Image (cartoon, rainbow, N blue to C red):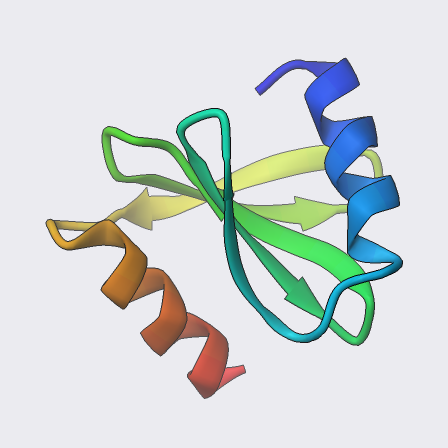
Length: 74
């Protein structure tokens, strides 16, 4: 994910409810009006920490279902 895409999702999150959304092949997570994590179409899962992204692991298919499960555990 590029810096520009991160910035776009950061701004979009300010007007979204908690949940999982898709954008250009990414599943991204909003919680408390903040962009907190995303998964790539290949299943790599990243969490946002400050100005960077930290890889937490890899999800199997269906990726969206796994991301929603992760969000519920938070």
